[in-house]
Length: 199
Image (cartoon, rainbow, N blue to C red):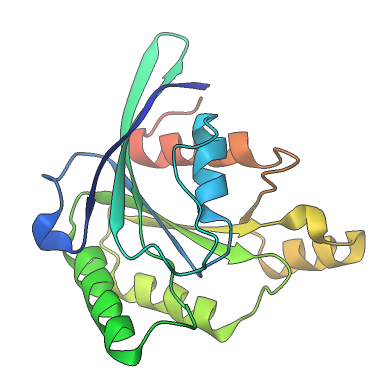
């Protein structure tokens, strides 16, 4: 399955400035420096669709990308929504509060989100901030919305650590952008969830 279209649409500081809701939005969230931009680029086979910042947490805007996948004769249009990373260290407290407020309002009120992709660093699988994010999404998720946990950077794990991660999080998808591991599996899971179709 290949991305035949992938382009940046717009950035918005909050839900008020966001583009009109589409039918099939996929929201990506995770701590700063978890590898979100790299994963977005891998999913669409583009090098610079999503820009990764040298300073974790610098992206304060919600970024929208128009994506289209093609498999055989089927076309699957999606909107990828890249949410600002949480857990940034260097922002002032008032700025952090503003980001969190905008982020919370967006995920609670954006009805067209069909999938939440929560990214977690495989090297630090049980951080409280990630568990809190997971619980938050579970509490606000509507019946037609799904949460998919994705562990990034699994190529950095030893075999024993990898086995433990699989045991502890059996439903998660394990990815490595450098090794291209888990990327196709995640694409298929997104299509299956949004369109109800196995590809």
